[in-house]
Image 1 (cartoon, helix red, strand yellow):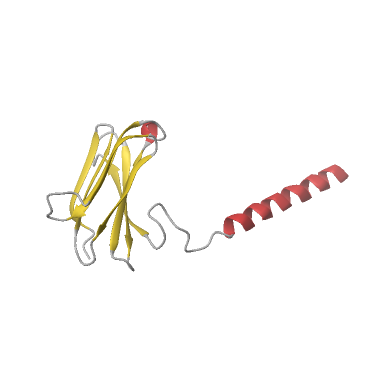
Image 2: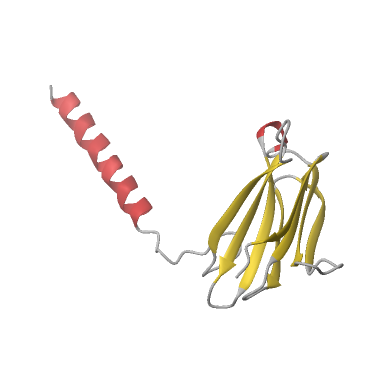
Length: 138
């Protein structure tokens, strides 16, 4: 009986310690783009068919900047393969930010100042591609 009681006490203490550590993360903790960014969009790559990745878009209302990253999905996650992310103001012919290469986890982050404007995005993982034009306006 004594051993079970001690094990139960230790297990409870471990659970409470885990809860306290997990709860200690500040609300303003920096995400993949840095502090102050909120996720505003998540898109499968490609738009249809076998999914190879995820394109995520973030916005910082204080700075007026958007940020984007591309992650591998399924068998493409955590493996070195082509990953690309691009971001620009809508209607521009050149990307404001682009990251392209053979990456294990993700491409990006890339940024563009876009307060009150629409943006365009491109995400690629392996042969899967997703283009978004004139999105997240404002």
